[in-house]
Image 1: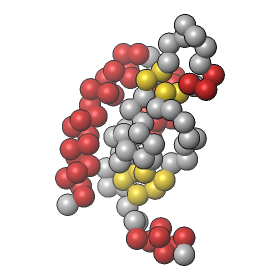
Image 2: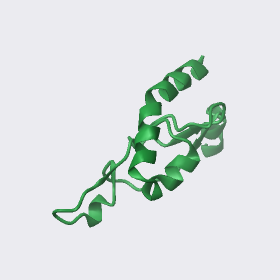
Image 3: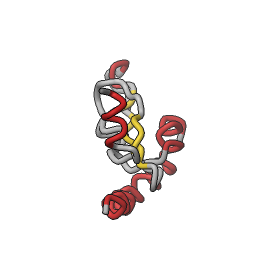
Length: 93
């Protein structure tokens, strides 16, 4: 049954992500600390045509490096997300 479901969506790959908030490390958040904002919306599927996550629009490299990126790097990625999501919509056909 799982193989049939996987064959129905051959252009996407799931990314494992723990449940919780859209903020990295919120569980361990202490009062006064700044949370790391992320565009993740817990829809973690990679489109094989574009290489982008259909949920947030980031590449797998950007997802993996997100918490290690500088604030300016994260802002640059965030600025590109709307155009990437439009690209994902076009790739759907």
